[in-house]
Image 1 (cartoon, one colour):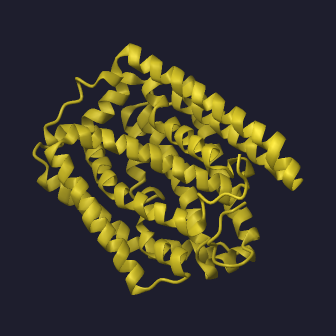
Image 2 (image 1 turned 180 degrees about the vertical axis):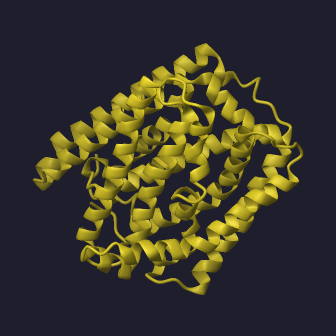
Length: 361
């Protein structure tokens, strides 16, 4: 498999339990929303924004709030002052610089947020495929890079294909408080949008086909591992499911639910596996200790992050007076925190060998 850095030599039972929980919550939410929006095409605005609002406390904001313990645990197996200081400095300097960009050049800052999230969410699903679900078909540098490209593009690009007007509206809420405008961006025009959809669709098919070829010709024959085929089937099923989901479900609702119950939960599972006491408890089927420990470790940083949202509200050049505008400003705060959070996850990737491969194509 190649992914290391869990807290014990054999956290297999804990990994299986967490993997099942991630699959259960993620798949159930996606499968429930698709028929719902088909049956009720015009979901009221307040309900479309509700998951993003809830993400302030429900998994979304808290999943990155534990970076100060995740990085040190991945690097040295324990939380120490040096590790906490490293994460703090990352947040101050990277987050501060990115916040400054929002005031100076809000449109480039917004586009960068989309691209950053594209990479980060793809990065998160790559770890999940390798570290939680045994996807040996991505145990290859080219396949891993393609997987990041596709998995990150599903929530970031596919909604633009299905809902260009609403996608523009969301980006507008990002830049309006800073007196920016997205009206001149070419990506909302029909021609470029359809071209991006065609290219991304082709890359998706290429990625799945290449993964299938690796399973048949390289991974399974070498290892004799039937799990290799199951890992690819899961990857293919999730990819198709998310294509449909982001094409059909309105962007704000789709991304809000995905952020909470797909991306954030999978990262939380990763962080829990770094903690020895949590792994030992889960190995015995006890959920209360790891759940409580995560909530406790996330509480203060989450409160501080919400304080950043309030401060941003106070200092933005333009007044925000609508639900969409307030949510857009909240997402700007998320953007500012996402840059250092992604840097920490890159650190985790390095420590856990996510980009180290046992098999070469």
